[in-house]
Amino acid sequence: MRIVLLGAPGSGKGTQAKKLMADKNIPQVSTGDMLREAVASGTRFGLKAQSIMEAGDLVPDDVVLGIISERLSQPDAADGFILDGFPRTTQQALDLSELLDQLGAPLDAAVLMDVDFDILMKRLTGRRTCSLTGKLLNIHFSSQEELDECLNAGGELIQREDDNEETIANRLEVYRTSTEPLIDYYAKRRKLKTINADGSIDEVYERLLEALG
Image (cartoon, rainbow, N blue to C red; front, side, top):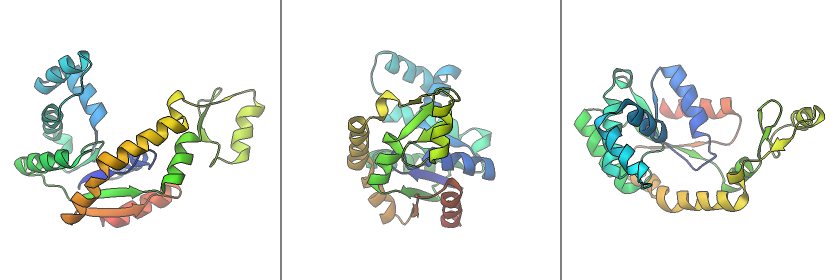
C-alpha cells in the first residue's frame, strides 16, 4: 500500500497515518521528520539540506526528493508507505511520480481527508492544553466535564500562540492556493479517494480503510 495523504491543517492526517502505520506495518513518511533524520544521519542529501537550512533558506524540491528517495529505499518501506506533507504542489507531484516510477514503486492512491473549513477553524482555534496534565482539549468539541476537570483541579487551558484565528486563516489560505490543485491532479489520474474526515477518530479510520479497499 503506497499512498499520499492530502488534507488541510487540522484534518487529522497525522492521527490517521499513525493508526494505519500500526495496523499495516508500513512507515509514515513525514517530510519534516525525514529532513531531521537525514541531517542527523549525515546522508548525502541530509548534508545538503543542513547547509541550506543553516543559511535560513527553504530546502529545494530536488533535495527533498533525494531525501524521499533515500528514505523509501530503506527495508521498512518495501511493503508500502504513507507520504504525509509531500507533495504540496503540482510540480512536486509530477516529480514524485517520476521518482516512484524509477524506484518501481508507483502510488496506489492519494487520499483526501475532507473537512469543512468552518470545522477546521474550530478544531485549530479551539485547541487547548491543560497546564496540569498536558492533555489536549478543545473548547468547541471536548465535553464540559473534561474542561472542568482541568479547571477545577487548578489548571489552566493554554492556547498555543500560533493557534490564533489570523494565523490559522492564513495557513488554510496557503493550503487552498498551493495544495488544493493536487486534488485535480490526482483526480485526473484516477488516483484520488475522498473520505469525510469529520467524526470520531475511529469513524474516520473505518472510512479510510473502506476507501483503500
